[in-house]
Length: 281
Image (cartoon, rainbow, N blue to C red):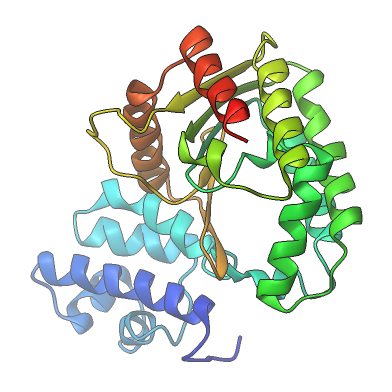
Protein backbone atom coordinates (compact mmCIF):
# COMPACT_ATOMS: atom_id res chain seq x y z
CA UNK A 1 0.00 0.00 0.00
CA UNK A 2 1.50 3.37 -0.95
CA UNK A 3 2.51 5.59 1.96
CA UNK A 4 0.71 8.92 2.26
CA UNK A 5 2.06 10.95 5.19
CA UNK A 6 -1.08 13.08 5.22
CA UNK A 7 -3.52 10.20 5.34
CA UNK A 8 -5.30 9.22 8.53
CA UNK A 9 -4.63 5.55 7.80
CA UNK A 10 -0.90 6.23 7.64
CA UNK A 11 -1.10 8.14 10.91
CA UNK A 12 -2.75 5.10 12.48
CA UNK A 13 -0.02 2.80 11.13
CA UNK A 14 2.61 5.16 12.51
CA UNK A 15 0.90 5.06 15.90
CA UNK A 16 1.15 1.25 15.94
CA UNK A 17 4.78 1.46 14.85
CA UNK A 18 5.48 3.93 17.62
CA UNK A 19 3.99 1.64 20.25
CA UNK A 20 6.12 -1.24 19.00
CA UNK A 21 9.21 0.96 19.16
CA UNK A 22 8.40 1.95 22.76
CA UNK A 23 7.97 -1.72 23.71
CA UNK A 24 11.39 -2.52 22.24
CA UNK A 25 13.03 0.35 24.09
CA UNK A 26 11.35 -0.61 27.35
CA UNK A 27 12.83 -4.10 26.91
CA UNK A 28 16.30 -2.57 26.50
CA UNK A 29 16.82 -4.02 23.02
CA UNK A 30 18.23 -2.49 19.87
CA UNK A 31 16.48 -3.06 16.57
CA UNK A 32 19.20 -5.46 15.46
CA UNK A 33 18.93 -7.44 18.72
CA UNK A 34 15.17 -7.74 18.37
CA UNK A 35 15.44 -8.91 14.75
CA UNK A 36 18.06 -11.49 15.70
CA UNK A 37 15.96 -12.92 18.53
CA UNK A 38 12.90 -13.00 16.28
CA UNK A 39 14.82 -14.75 13.48
CA UNK A 40 14.22 -11.89 11.05
CA UNK A 41 16.39 -10.09 8.53
CA UNK A 42 18.26 -7.30 10.30
CA UNK A 43 16.31 -4.53 8.53
CA UNK A 44 12.83 -5.89 9.23
CA UNK A 45 12.44 -4.37 12.68
CA UNK A 46 13.50 -0.97 11.30
CA UNK A 47 10.98 -1.16 8.45
CA UNK A 48 8.20 -2.02 10.91
CA UNK A 49 9.18 0.74 13.35
CA UNK A 50 9.20 3.33 10.59
CA UNK A 51 5.80 2.18 9.28
CA UNK A 52 7.30 1.18 5.95
CA UNK A 53 6.23 -2.46 6.31
CA UNK A 54 2.87 -3.19 7.99
CA UNK A 55 3.41 -5.99 10.53
CA UNK A 56 1.37 -9.19 10.34
CA UNK A 57 -0.44 -10.58 13.37
CA UNK A 58 2.41 -13.05 13.80
CA UNK A 59 4.96 -10.24 13.59
CA UNK A 60 3.21 -8.34 16.39
CA UNK A 61 2.99 -11.44 18.59
CA UNK A 62 6.67 -12.26 17.98
CA UNK A 63 7.71 -8.67 18.71
CA UNK A 64 5.78 -8.64 21.99
CA UNK A 65 7.06 -12.09 23.00
CA UNK A 66 10.69 -11.17 22.38
CA UNK A 67 10.22 -7.97 24.42
CA UNK A 68 8.36 -9.68 27.27
CA UNK A 69 5.15 -7.77 26.53
CA UNK A 70 2.76 -10.57 25.52
CA UNK A 71 -0.07 -8.81 27.37
CA UNK A 72 0.00 -5.96 24.84
CA UNK A 73 -0.20 -8.11 21.72
CA UNK A 74 -4.00 -8.32 21.40
CA UNK A 75 -4.49 -4.54 21.61
CA UNK A 76 -1.74 -3.93 19.07
CA UNK A 77 -3.12 -6.52 16.65
CA UNK A 78 -6.58 -4.96 16.87
CA UNK A 79 -5.15 -1.46 16.30
CA UNK A 80 -3.06 -2.72 13.39
CA UNK A 81 -6.02 -4.41 11.71
CA UNK A 82 -8.18 -1.32 11.98
CA UNK A 83 -5.53 1.18 10.85
CA UNK A 84 -7.16 1.72 7.46
CA UNK A 85 -10.70 2.04 8.80
CA UNK A 86 -10.30 3.60 12.23
CA UNK A 87 -10.54 7.22 11.05
CA UNK A 88 -12.74 7.95 8.05
CA UNK A 89 -13.77 11.45 7.01
CA UNK A 90 -17.50 12.08 6.80
CA UNK A 91 -16.98 13.69 3.39
CA UNK A 92 -15.61 10.39 2.15
CA UNK A 93 -18.43 8.39 3.74
CA UNK A 94 -21.11 10.78 2.51
CA UNK A 95 -19.65 11.71 -0.86
CA UNK A 96 -22.81 10.48 -2.63
CA UNK A 97 -25.16 11.45 0.19
CA UNK A 98 -26.08 9.90 3.53
CA UNK A 99 -28.62 7.24 2.54
CA UNK A 100 -26.08 4.62 1.51
CA UNK A 101 -24.11 5.14 4.73
CA UNK A 102 -27.25 4.42 6.77
CA UNK A 103 -27.98 1.30 4.75
CA UNK A 104 -24.39 0.05 4.95
CA UNK A 105 -24.63 -0.26 8.72
CA UNK A 106 -27.71 -2.45 8.78
CA UNK A 107 -25.71 -5.71 9.15
CA UNK A 108 -23.79 -4.29 12.15
CA UNK A 109 -27.03 -3.19 13.82
CA UNK A 110 -28.73 -6.50 13.20
CA UNK A 111 -25.80 -8.54 14.53
CA UNK A 112 -25.25 -6.46 17.68
CA UNK A 113 -26.93 -7.76 20.81
CA UNK A 114 -26.05 -4.98 23.25
CA UNK A 115 -25.98 -1.32 22.24
CA UNK A 116 -24.58 1.34 24.55
CA UNK A 117 -25.04 4.85 23.20
CA UNK A 118 -24.04 8.22 24.65
CA UNK A 119 -25.08 11.46 22.93
CA UNK A 120 -24.10 14.93 24.01
CA UNK A 121 -25.27 16.94 20.99
CA UNK A 122 -28.31 15.37 19.27
CA UNK A 123 -30.95 12.75 19.95
CA UNK A 124 -29.43 9.27 19.30
CA UNK A 125 -29.97 8.07 15.73
CA UNK A 126 -31.69 4.93 17.02
CA UNK A 127 -34.40 7.09 18.58
CA UNK A 128 -34.81 9.76 15.89
CA UNK A 129 -38.11 10.40 14.18
CA UNK A 130 -38.09 10.77 10.42
CA UNK A 131 -38.83 14.50 10.61
CA UNK A 132 -36.02 15.13 13.11
CA UNK A 133 -33.56 13.01 11.10
CA UNK A 134 -34.49 14.83 7.89
CA UNK A 135 -33.80 18.21 9.49
CA UNK A 136 -30.51 16.94 10.92
CA UNK A 137 -29.28 15.43 7.65
CA UNK A 138 -30.09 18.68 5.86
CA UNK A 139 -27.82 20.51 8.31
CA UNK A 140 -25.07 17.93 7.88
CA UNK A 141 -25.11 18.01 4.08
CA UNK A 142 -24.91 21.80 4.07
CA UNK A 143 -22.03 21.84 6.57
CA UNK A 144 -20.10 19.07 4.78
CA UNK A 145 -20.85 20.26 1.26
CA UNK A 146 -22.17 16.82 0.28
CA UNK A 147 -25.26 15.92 -1.78
CA UNK A 148 -28.50 16.60 0.09
CA UNK A 149 -30.51 13.39 0.20
CA UNK A 150 -31.83 14.16 3.67
CA UNK A 151 -35.32 12.72 3.13
CA UNK A 152 -33.97 9.43 1.74
CA UNK A 153 -31.27 9.22 4.43
CA UNK A 154 -33.83 9.85 7.18
CA UNK A 155 -36.09 7.10 5.84
CA UNK A 156 -33.12 4.72 5.75
CA UNK A 157 -32.16 5.64 9.33
CA UNK A 158 -35.68 5.03 10.61
CA UNK A 159 -35.83 1.70 8.74
CA UNK A 160 -32.48 0.70 10.28
CA UNK A 161 -33.72 1.69 13.74
CA UNK A 162 -36.58 -0.78 13.61
CA UNK A 163 -34.09 -3.19 15.14
CA UNK A 164 -35.35 -1.75 18.45
CA UNK A 165 -38.68 -3.47 17.92
CA UNK A 166 -37.47 -6.93 16.99
CA UNK A 167 -35.03 -9.61 18.04
CA UNK A 168 -33.20 -10.03 21.31
CA UNK A 169 -31.28 -6.75 21.21
CA UNK A 170 -30.80 -4.56 24.29
CA UNK A 171 -30.36 -0.80 24.20
CA UNK A 172 -28.85 1.38 26.91
CA UNK A 173 -28.93 5.01 25.80
CA UNK A 174 -27.74 8.13 27.61
CA UNK A 175 -28.33 11.72 26.56
CA UNK A 176 -27.30 15.01 28.10
CA UNK A 177 -30.31 17.15 29.00
CA UNK A 178 -29.06 19.72 26.48
CA UNK A 179 -29.98 17.38 23.61
CA UNK A 180 -33.62 17.77 24.62
CA UNK A 181 -33.34 21.53 24.23
CA UNK A 182 -31.21 21.94 21.10
CA UNK A 183 -33.66 22.94 18.34
CA UNK A 184 -33.25 20.68 15.29
CA UNK A 185 -36.00 21.56 12.85
CA UNK A 186 -39.05 23.57 13.87
CA UNK A 187 -41.07 23.38 17.09
CA UNK A 188 -43.43 20.78 15.63
CA UNK A 189 -40.48 18.56 14.67
CA UNK A 190 -38.98 18.84 18.15
CA UNK A 191 -42.30 18.19 19.85
CA UNK A 192 -42.78 15.05 17.79
CA UNK A 193 -39.24 13.91 18.53
CA UNK A 194 -39.53 14.44 22.28
CA UNK A 195 -42.94 12.78 22.31
CA UNK A 196 -41.42 9.75 20.60
CA UNK A 197 -38.81 9.51 23.34
CA UNK A 198 -41.62 9.21 25.89
CA UNK A 199 -43.10 6.37 23.85
CA UNK A 200 -39.95 4.40 23.08
CA UNK A 201 -38.56 4.53 26.62
CA UNK A 202 -41.41 2.28 27.72
CA UNK A 203 -40.13 -0.59 25.56
CA UNK A 204 -38.70 -3.44 27.66
CA UNK A 205 -35.56 -3.58 25.52
CA UNK A 206 -34.76 0.13 25.96
CA UNK A 207 -33.16 1.95 28.89
CA UNK A 208 -33.07 5.72 28.36
CA UNK A 209 -31.23 7.89 30.85
CA UNK A 210 -31.01 11.68 30.86
CA UNK A 211 -28.07 13.43 32.53
CA UNK A 212 -29.52 16.60 34.07
CA UNK A 213 -27.90 20.00 33.81
CA UNK A 214 -27.75 19.99 37.59
CA UNK A 215 -25.95 16.64 37.96
CA UNK A 216 -22.68 17.00 39.92
CA UNK A 217 -20.14 15.90 37.30
CA UNK A 218 -17.86 13.01 38.09
CA UNK A 219 -17.32 12.50 34.33
CA UNK A 220 -17.02 15.38 31.89
CA UNK A 221 -19.14 15.70 28.75
CA UNK A 222 -17.70 13.51 26.00
CA UNK A 223 -18.11 13.26 22.25
CA UNK A 224 -21.00 11.11 21.01
CA UNK A 225 -20.10 7.42 20.91
CA UNK A 226 -21.71 4.01 20.39
CA UNK A 227 -20.48 0.68 21.76
CA UNK A 228 -21.49 -2.39 19.74
CA UNK A 229 -21.30 -5.40 22.08
CA UNK A 230 -17.63 -5.66 23.11
CA UNK A 231 -16.46 -5.59 19.48
CA UNK A 232 -16.37 -1.99 18.34
CA UNK A 233 -16.80 1.63 19.40
CA UNK A 234 -17.73 4.36 16.94
CA UNK A 235 -16.92 7.93 17.98
CA UNK A 236 -18.44 10.82 16.04
CA UNK A 237 -16.24 13.87 15.49
CA UNK A 238 -17.07 16.95 13.43
CA UNK A 239 -15.05 15.81 10.45
CA UNK A 240 -14.76 12.05 10.81
CA UNK A 241 -15.98 8.78 12.26
CA UNK A 242 -13.45 7.00 14.48
CA UNK A 243 -13.85 3.22 14.64
CA UNK A 244 -12.13 1.63 17.63
CA UNK A 245 -11.56 -2.11 17.91
CA UNK A 246 -8.64 -2.34 20.35
CA UNK A 247 -9.95 -4.21 23.44
CA UNK A 248 -8.23 -1.86 25.88
CA UNK A 249 -9.78 1.23 24.31
CA UNK A 250 -13.21 -0.40 24.10
CA UNK A 251 -12.95 -1.10 27.82
CA UNK A 252 -12.14 2.57 28.48
CA UNK A 253 -15.30 3.64 26.68
CA UNK A 254 -17.31 1.01 28.53
CA UNK A 255 -16.01 2.38 31.82
CA UNK A 256 -16.83 5.94 30.78
CA UNK A 257 -20.35 4.82 29.83
CA UNK A 258 -20.77 3.18 33.24
CA UNK A 259 -19.69 6.38 35.00
CA UNK A 260 -21.97 8.53 32.86
CA UNK A 261 -24.83 6.14 33.62
CA UNK A 262 -24.43 6.94 37.30
CA UNK A 263 -25.10 10.62 36.56
CA UNK A 264 -28.34 9.99 34.66
CA UNK A 265 -31.92 9.86 35.87
CA UNK A 266 -34.39 7.30 34.57
CA UNK A 267 -38.10 6.52 34.52
CA UNK A 268 -40.32 9.22 36.01
CA UNK A 269 -37.46 11.67 36.54
CA UNK A 270 -36.31 11.33 32.92
CA UNK A 271 -39.89 11.76 31.73
CA UNK A 272 -40.17 14.99 33.72
CA UNK A 273 -37.10 16.40 31.96
CA UNK A 274 -38.49 15.44 28.56
CA UNK A 275 -41.95 16.91 29.25
CA UNK A 276 -40.26 20.05 30.57
CA UNK A 277 -38.44 20.40 27.25
CA UNK A 278 -41.74 19.94 25.39
CA UNK A 279 -43.40 22.62 27.53
CA UNK A 280 -40.55 25.02 26.75
CA UNK A 281 -41.10 24.83 22.97
